[in-house]
Image 1 (cartoon, rainbow, N blue to C red):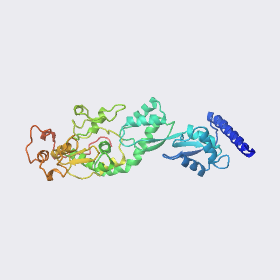
Image 2: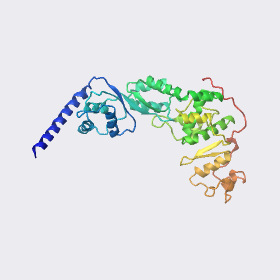
Image 3: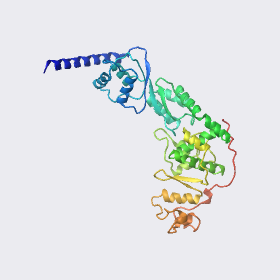
Length: 378
């Protein structure tokens, strides 16, 4: 081995030892310096983080170079260990110190709270991400109000209390929904009714595109004095930890609860989840139609119906194991004149042996109007 190469290896070993020693020293207590806020956004790669550190002036000069930063990551097995969040670092820090802080000492973390979660689900996510005690989780649940914690992506301090996070979510809700409350008021829809209906739509729709149609159907049923008959409201009653949204069974529909829209007319007393903006907007601007029923097939496609007979046909066609093979063109144009279609549209008497039939007692129709603006909370 030639002399220059020996010197290079020795320098590398010495540099590695120095880096290891300094990291061990600073990991015990990160140096107290004037620090700035360094934010790593979600879905940022390691290479992008290094480029960001360099562009913001944290990695400069030969000793504070990106190369030394990468070496630090390699020496300590920190590759792919840096998480999105916010950190306090200084331009006076060495790269290995910065690397150590980015791996071990975030002071804020990103928390994603999707639309359609109930408060308990939000609390579970927050407890996991912010490393809360059960006390902080309960504090959040005591302060927060179902339907009024805005679903969004938040960058939250790790030392936030449950109360502080609950207030943050409520403040974001007020900020985002203020204009929509004004629009709803112009249509005589009270705030609580708006959010309750939005929560139903959020849980019932398979995607945002379906929301205006479902909103219109729910409004149609309410204005006709029909029960909503929504599985989502029963799921809210039956939910429990590890299974907050159970599959509804036929016997569940007899559950005595004001949230059971199979038993009781009108909307539930409170929201069943925390809806997003699309669901709230759908309540204010529903799709106008004559539909009163709908269902989703196994692919999540929605199939509305104007009458209970049509709805039964949709059940037979889309939800039964052996749907009618000749209905694909639609009942009115069924080329074979199948019994299911003809009975469904009233052109043939039902056979008592058939699997389903139209029961007029299940249809609570009429033209009774209701006064929407009856809530007590504004």
